[in-house]
Image (cartoon, rainbow over all chains, first blue to last red; front, top):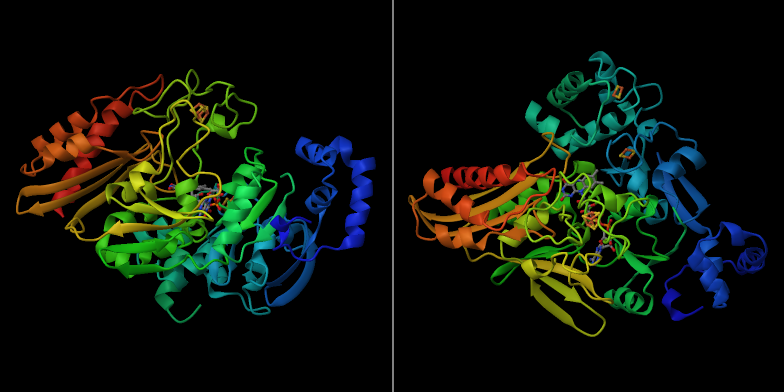
Length: 208
Length: 327
Ligand SMILES: Cc1cc2nc3c(=O)[nH]c(=O)nc-3n(C[C@H](O)[C@H](O)[C@H](O)COP(=O)(O)OP(=O)(O)OC[C@H]3O[C@@H](n4cnc5c(N)ncnc54)[C@H](O)[C@@H]3O)c2cc1C
Ligand code: SF4
Ligand code: FES
Ligand code: FES
């Protein structure tokens, strides 16, 4: 390995050996041209790295997971495909809708534009982690009371964003709520009711 | 997304050494632009260098300027006490960009380096000199409603999409750039470049260099009379059609000094120095604002679908000046 990679976590060598052989035999047809070029240049280590899975320790809704993932996996795909937490929705997959909003170390972010590998050691909260057992989170209860949804597709993202909006102190009036909730698009147009739900939770006060 | 090798950098030198040695490596900060481009196949780095462990998050007062680290988050900068107090223009520009979720991820360095939102650049089946030099410009004879009216060439008529950068250009900020061998400081307005003959390059950053901070001089009286006016297709969560950063140093009804910059009109944040000079020493009247706006439009040139910008731009300049003066 050249010293470009001195920060790499230790790679599993038997696995690497396997890739050295398998890339030569089978993967060629499916392989991007720069990898083929790398193969021509006898850069087997580099090829192996590109297919290598990496260790990830991540806490999701209070449970610590030790996983092995490819660096290209997004946090959203990790949650939905590997951890089967399908509450976070894939609306656009490009940062434009907010359906995938989760909390990372308490801050709201878009899981579709977050690489899972970059969340090592962090605490994630998804919509599944908001209720306490059978007791709904106050924001979930308020969305139900105020009819803050129709089809419900945007709702997990709306609720995660709404909780953060109140915690950040950005829910002091309707204008502010609308402006700080602008990253969550609702195709059904439930906006007035969403604002009502957030306003109620904010006005009740207390820590949420 | 094509797979890649992922490394976490522990020192700045780590980053710049790797960038120098490996032309296929790219920095990742918040990931909000790069991950999107990688998903679409517009970017395909073979190695991502995660710089989030570097201590470049600080926002601090120094003698004569405020220094903001390249990894400071857009949401944090927007609400930082020093920034709100001294550069409300910057705070307002940041708040008008993207969404709170994105601002919680996006960094100052990443914001400066974000690529254009030209739809031909994003569509890998289309010609685009910026994405694929020599293939032509799809927007030139295509649908170019969002495109430039200043400083463009037939090679590329894209605009830089950032709001933050427009404010930093108006505030005479500087950029601190590091390589493994040295550190250099350049004017913010010299960081981004015009498309020229090599639109594949958005800015003057060289191979092996990274942004470490921006510095904003604070010995001025612009804070009281400044605003960021952003005109877009919907009232939030959209890129600017036109934006104006206006800052005035006023003495009663008289303008001592003016700063004006525009977004959504050029390949880089566009400073309106002719209009600034015109306003110096003038009374803050609507008539003068209109004249300044007309001067600013002197070299403007529209394409097939963005003719409306030739009217929207001067109106926005005059309006922003009016708002700033009335504060
Ligand atoms: C739906 C959507 C809407 C948006 N709306 C707006 C808007 O209205 N206004 C606006 O201004 N922006 C908007 N943005 C863009 C957003 O502001 C940028 O994506 C963000 O600022 C990029 O920062 P980042 O840290 O995530 O960069 P990354 O995606 O991590 O990186 C972007 C680029 O910068 C490089 N880079 C990062 N840090 C450094 C460094 N320190 N030195 C050198 N190179 C570096 C990377 O290599 C990469 O090429 C929007 C984005 C999305 C997805
Ligand atoms: S305007 Fe620039 S970015 Fe857009 S298609 Fe033309 S060359 Fe590409
Ligand atoms: S799925 Fe993430 S913003 Fe749309
Ligand atoms: S409830 Fe249907 S998209 Fe919002």
